[in-house]
Image (cartoon, rainbow, N blue to C red):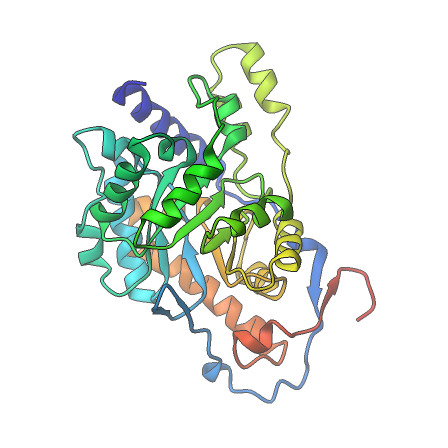
Length: 344
């Protein structure tokens, strides 16, 4: 596919997501904490720090992969990096495919590391790009171009199946992931893009040595619906929109993968609306919580807007800890949580 076609696709994606930024519940509305009326804590002393890839984070939030390959991406990526550095959060960049295959880097350079020297920074390629002999070279380039701490390989078979000119041949993807794990000097992270990762798939990924999994379940951006909006024919739209609600809800994917892989570091993304959803995700098994589409409009505006957005989520998470009697994330993961409507 021509660079111009890929860039147009990325711009289409941005425009559609910006028109639909309100996240749907990723299954977290089904859950509620038991309120603690006697927390015996000082709110300001609650410790939200965690570590990822040998770097300390001030709160367990990943600014998730959003965009790559559109002119606006330069502004977006710089604003996200500034905010992540200010707040001590992790940042995963959007797909680097177009930047690697064209003369335009779209802001995906070592300038990001200069802006954000202290945070976990994650590179990103699609599964189809790591296939074949060129896969390792492309992965190395993706990591080196931003001095990343890890490489995200995103799995998006549904989106590719519905996308005009999408990658249809997914044979050999698991083997390619296994080879990357062996060949790269940085950890390999696997993420879905909104349809969820099941426990059996997660187990196969663990067997080949991936370091972290983002379950990225249904509830956030539906890329099937996005491709439906991009469809050029009535038939293509009908095929895509039938899958608009396809996928494993984030809370279900998270619980299933955590039960199957107790020691696997997990990211929860997909339908994280606020810091309370983040607290529920952490309680259900996540180590880190990711959010993308909900902050996209802020990222277009300024780094300060992104900072305010995530400061709000952090404060909501802190209050959730306070009102569950949790002095830190370890205690939050033991806080009473039940399905809404069930007795505590």
